[in-house]
Length: 310
Image (tube, rainbow, N blue to C red):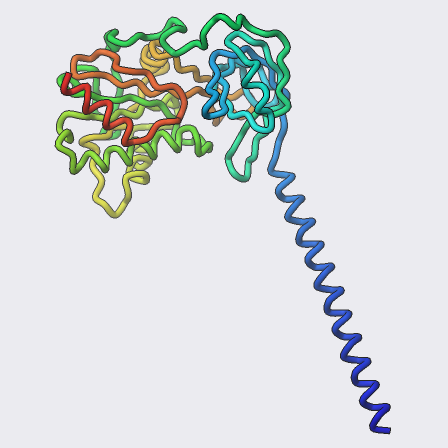
């Protein structure tokens, strides 16, 4: 009898282990399926066509003047990373007409091009364009005057920066992309905090200009700036200012440096825009126009500091 009881108990134990293992396997499979579905649903794909403006081989990026992307973005010029298509960098030249898939990962805030095809090759003997070759501002040119209102509600113009080297970049506060406005504001606020203890703190200034006057009031820009400087660090805006102006006043600067921006027709609260940061010397002349986001606060401070010694 005892042998039968032992056998029965072992059978029950083995059966329970099998059931547990089976259920765990099912649960893992279900979780994995759910994770894959979540990752898949965060990706959106759009067809894109455009003309190559410049090619950044080391960083695997291309600046593209693209056509309208229905349901996502108006025609504009901006820089795109390229993935899974390294071969194109041996073929892409300025003025090449290309088509590709634009992949947007809403979960990670990333975007890139893949499945790139060259529709028509450009002139291989023509060098890639730079900002200064596209009819925009050139090094040594005077920055046009501007009339803006800063985070304190004070009117500011070019004369407020006389005798100081400074940099201007452009954002709108509602921008959700980590590599666009968020990165520009992070870089400027980091640079401002670094300059607080620098020998150049009284001779270098930073200015962030919003191109969304309907939403970015001076009060909102101040709150936005405090969020980047740090609420616990008693932030002030002696070095870094944020300002807004009319569309006419802002475009006087953006047109000068080659920055494109427009309201997203699919979502009126968003803007489609490129990235430009312009460095100005103490005499109000252009030092450099930086396209894109591949620069650091340290780079910015170093270049502005050098200009003060020239």
